[in-house]
Length: 167
Image 1 (cartoon, helix red, strand yellow):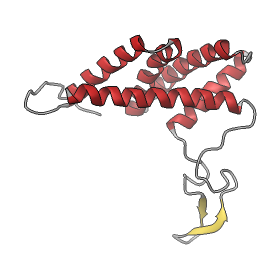
Image 2 (tube, one colour; image 1 turned 135 degrees about the vertical axis):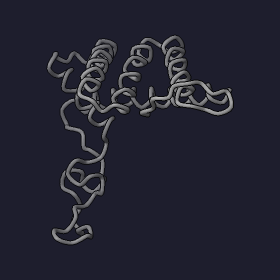
Image 3 (cartoon, helix red, strand yellow; image 1 turned 180 degrees about the vertical axis):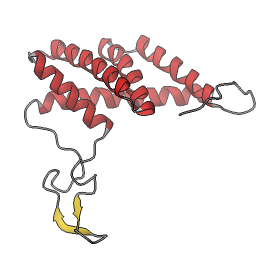
Image 4 (cartoon, helix red, strand yellow; image 1 turned 90 degrees about the horizontal axis):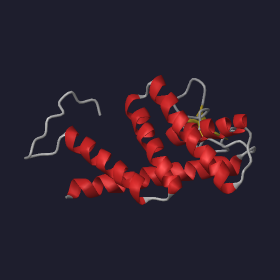
């Protein structure tokens, strides 16, 4: 959303309506959820900012929010990860959440044949034909749990925004 017109119009929906609904939904989400989801509400806002702007500053802010969420999950689930492992888990979860497609085949599952506009018959070696960015073996479960929380946050925020816009 890159609108310079944030005026309210009572006859039709504008970008301002979506911004108001998003703010109200994330505020309510932070109040209504357990501690993990309340922490994640901040991360959800940072992720939305990253999706909209795509800037380095937004990426760093989102990463710091997800790192805080990862530290909370580490304490809650007793992962006992070291600081560099927590950062790695947060970075990989963010990368997968923002762009879940395989970076080698661009989500196609197969590579393009050189010099031809068709796919080869050999599956991508990186993703084994799934088209999804593979997760590393080390800390895979922890990364999946962080991704799961991020997906839950996205879904509940989308539902809440839709609810606010219906009213």
